[in-house]
Length: 560
Image 1 (cartoon, one colour):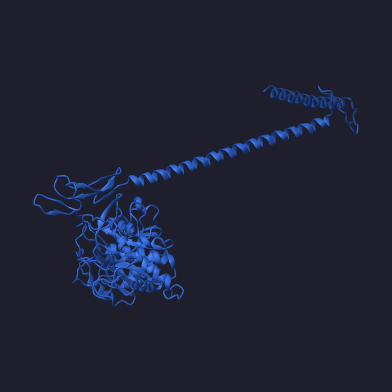
Image 2: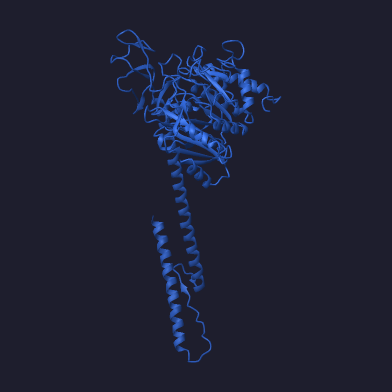
């Protein structure tokens, strides 16, 4: 400390001496100017007197200037170094705080995943399973709970799967999904007409058609997939949809016209959980297939009722969202969230392709009368066009409806662009007509089986069914951070979409026809020998499909 004070005092005295030298030089110059006679041409330069320092050395004026400059330069460098060290210190502290925040966030995420319960039939609030009104919560296993609509008595200890009521009958849990095979009426939107025009048609053409046939334009869109223009009209009087379509067919400006058909979700009733909560992964050999691939690089578009992106099992799963329904869909549905969870869950549940990326396409809207969800032709066409424009390799359509010429044309266009389309076979039953879009030639139709490889009782039958997959009592995520047991051909189609994602992750150049041949040749035969109208080629197997692909990869049999 004393050395620092001494050094500072010495430098201060030197600075004062330098200042005195400068003042002396100025005074000498002024004196010379006063003594100079008027009209003198030159001014002599006065040499400043030398100044003696304390150590006996003599300090000349030029040396003072040079030493002062060196001192300022050293001082500037010292300040610059100090500033640089402070910045480096702040940067190290900022990096340390960032690493600490990341560590805390990862610890919270692990803790949340460990503490988050599986709530079947209810909703998770404050990390607890909350059952609906008049429902009984019972424990299945550690952190797995279920909600049962029974009497107010608690569940009988030791009984997992059912609770008898006062009459001795077994009461099963149920949700507000429509019964299997029940189709929302009417099959098309009353008063809506869908018209397809040429892409180059001007806006005045659609307005002229509306004035001629006494219609009101409610929407128009350009579909890049089919290279056409889609216009939706509303009938303003009491004419029926069939009368308006018959009149429009005679107009040369109209390429095609049809009703705005409705499509429904293919989900059945929820039941109580079985002993194996995710038996579908074991049935389809998905666990063994994960040692080969997890579906990285595959992009799957889910055209459904929307996905709850806040669910812990679906964190960072959805890459893009297109809400076609808009305000008509106030919140994501359980159906779309379940489809996404079966394909890509990474949390308490394991998905078939946990490293694939999802595209969320919400085409369903709620009905004001019975609160059931339905999709229309216009919404599905717009969603399909958006999915193909976003380069979706696999398109899952777990919905069913009537034969739709415009939808068939769009699916054919998507097929030509190497899109692999998977659809549910339908929940109409054995005597029901073919369900679309599953019955189209370009689509892979999937039926549902249970834990005993029996066909789902309400599943459709027909020659259009390609393969089968587990779809009865499937544990899947639901909105509200909950889980539900779902049943229907919709969830069987989701398993097949996930297996195709595993295949595409290994061989991205596969076509839809090659994928179908690969699934059919590696499927386990069920029912009658060979392909049949009930099970198709049989139950799919992820491991056998990948093994068969690896065997024929050198011959490129499935890459054509």
